Length: 133
Ligand code: ZN
Image (tube, rainbow, N blue to C red; front, side, top):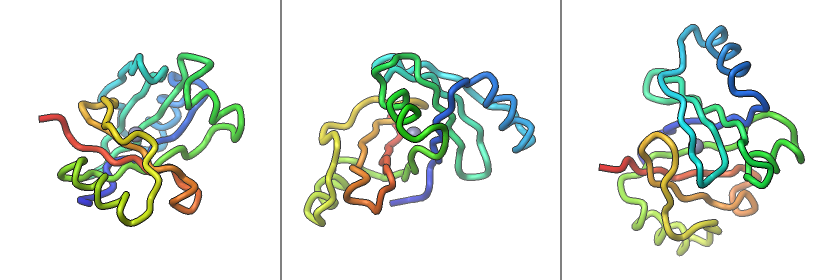
């Protein structure tokens, strides 16, 4: 894996969280994006080589809505950038990790993404992402 691409934070209100994180980080988000099939609205802040992703649910049935209902706002996932998703999936399956979606799906910020189940990663939801060329 290449680096921590971003850290995802679940928030109730994206506009308010954008203002707060803009104050905290001293920079404005460089993009806001609706990921319709995931039922989330996201915004991204670039910090050096990594990013902070804020996620607000747009749909009661989305993973972010369920997460906030269960745990409240807070850190939701860590995303690692990989060179080749397919070979990483094969490698991690062999190592015994539970992959939530074996077929990469389109995520925010021009990425293909795969998630590892937190049960197999000490309680942390892990996203693997690969830039779409
Ligand atoms: Zn993410």
